[in-house]
Amino acid sequence: MTTADDIFEQSANNIQNLGLREIPFTESPTDLQNKTLDRIFTGRENELREVFNLFQNRERRRILVYGRIGIGKTAFLLEILSVLSRKRPQMLATYISLSSELDLATTALIALAKAMPDDNWAQRQLHQMGIPTTKGIKERTSEAGANMVFAGKFSEKDVSATKAQYPTVSLEILLDRALEKYPDGVLIAIDDLDKQNPRRVRELMHDAQGILKGKAWFMLTGHPLGITGDLLTSERGLFDLQLKLDELDQLTTYKMLINYLNSARINNNCDDVNDPRSVLPFSKETAEEFCRVSLGKPRFFNRLGNAVLSTAANLGATRITPEVLQQGFKTIEKDRKLLLAEKVMENRIFQLLQKRGSLSDETITIEELELLGVKSYSEIVPYLERLDDEDFVQRSPQLDAIAYTPILLPSSD
Image 1 (cartoon, rainbow, N blue to C red):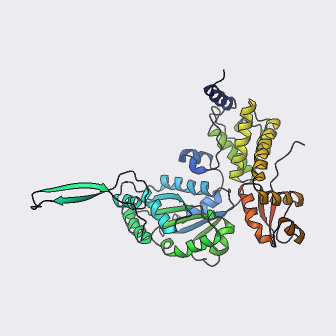
Image 2 (image 1 turned 60 degrees about the vertical axis):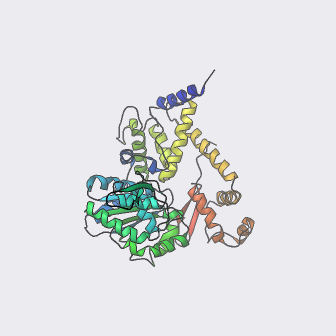
């Protein structure tokens, strides 16, 4: 009788038959160790150069990195922090993802306090906000007798958790403490502004102008639709560098595939783009097709990679042939259809996009709006953005409008 242990061993063997220790593709770079990220991070040389040029200046800077969802903003941010940790050991660089419940001052305070585990005052700030610390925080009380000089009883109890009442002031105090230890400065990287709605982002940025112009370096990431309309105009002087990340070109995507595979390959760490062994278990033909279909979008690239290698393992394949690649595309297409079936409005919009090939506020008709049950194009934009987030569509700017086009996987038919 086949046991669960047998199935696990077979699954592991199927991946090893592809010449890999594991499936290397991951949608979230925060799940990777720094050394792994350094191995697979590819391209963005010009963008990295623009950022690192600023770090040759002693004056603190504020940097905004923006681009479409899934374009690689988090990986870009983490790669910068990884390089700084090696090249600037006297600079403290810390990363945090913005929570919808917190303002930027509190977020920065948490990020900095977590990066200073040996500072008791920093750990106390975390504990007071109810955030677990590496060390238990106690407060000491005394119960003295009549002659306190000679006799007294001391006890300790947990400090109660309360909300940070003055996060801006606490952040300034903690920055001063950090700068005593890190003379090259403090960098606070805050990711995921694009997970907030545009109105919330405007409020956050307006309230945070003081801390952003304070004693720390700041790097923020966000989505162009949610932030740049305001931040790149009304807040023009807030950032020293506004850096846009675009899709990767075909050659860079191919090199990225090589790096991913080499990070998990059992043998043969070949990185020559002209050597077919560099993309094993893909053939050069299937590797090029895989990269073309991924559209230069790192997260879509990872989603496709997971589906293709998982399908190959399930089939017991040892190479990604055109037939195996097509089966992988069918697998992810099936999953996409199931996901769309649960979302009525998104499904109707996607079907319209498939029929039309492109959709914008300039081309959609009154009849089509009525069929969707809306009065204006702006009402369907949130649905289009969610479809973009799930890699069903892509947004392409035109001269007079923003158009959405469907992402259609190749069919063997």
